[in-house]
Image 1 (cartoon, rainbow, N blue to C red):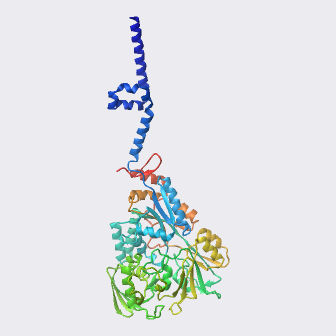
Image 2 (spheres, one colour):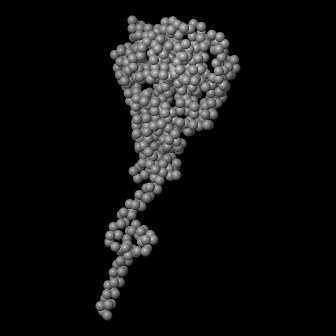
Length: 575
């Protein structure tokens, strides 16, 4: 009896001790007990081997929570393409700066600095990239806002970003047809506001053009707003002061082509303007003036009569007539480079009145006609091109047959192009020849300028170059405002850049201060839309400019449903 009582007391003590152990166990060890399986087999919860399970269960639960946080999936690596440092170190460094910002935000970024021709070829496909750094340098026709609104962003333009907005297209089309200047300005301002809001691309900076030339060898220079020394008027006006009569310019780009039907990346535009005439040219003051057209008369808003000069001839001696002009416009519209198509589309028909008179019939009023169309479309020899079934075929030297102030001499790829003065032209150059000498990078151009191997540069000097030439006695620095734009663009065809909320947040990762004051050493202004502040009449000062604020970028992403996983990777919003 005593033994039995003692045994019962011992069992009670054991049970109390067991209950105390269960009561003191961590909460995570109790969760499995609540499952249906644990309720059916409660004895197993007290076994020693099961006591080791709480840590595993806690890890599983944490993984499940993180999976819920990142249920939309981690954003795949971003393919970000931009120029190599040898082509443009500022674009390159801007791309690398943005890469760091985006990686700090939780993105994986695959950078793609590359040869400029390869880079533009990828952009042309619309595939294989998520973002890119690009630029529109100042060219005279770009003073009219139509070029920088329509070419990059209209659904029928070049449109690298794949931006398709009926609202923007409607405003862009309306400004192209509005003949009242004040009303057109309102539409241009509205288009800028729409672009700033939708952010298919965001301006990074607008540079200051600082050029240099050898003042001991050349005078009578004509620097031009936004273009500096490398402009048509300057290259035809510069006069030798010694027996050095061949003007040599350092050029960082290799030419893509000199075929007027297949010009693609912009590198050949300026040299081809030396060899081909156009109906108009944008003057040094930015105003389009008659050129191959002796004059034009506005019959009504959609009808313009053009009267040609009668003293023009192609370099083979055959006169330039209205037939050549009509052929050039019609064939370029049908088979020419896509970059010119938006500026040819407004033309419904060209009527030949006589050998030197044409009437342009437009589909609708088109105020940029003179700067954006007349000043861009080359006049080509009908007698040479009309029997060529595929004018975009591979470049041939004999294709370079124009009527302009320079004739084609030769092209040695990777070395130089030579243009010979056309002494029969009504504005014959003062130099006997003009050379574009190719270099690998801007630094070697500056050294060649200092060594007098070249006499001028094709582009603005980088800050390091400015300091190198500042105290060279025979070199002159020329500084002008610039109305071009350098920008980061997004591929709206693919996620996450197809999401406006994402692009809006990304807009706060652009460190304007570092770009302007460090990379460009103050020789620029922060990006403020695609119409630069220097183009003051058309620039909208009230458009959205997203300030640099990485924390605000994170906040906006979170508000839009984006999340981060335990490793800090940015994830898509949950569906």
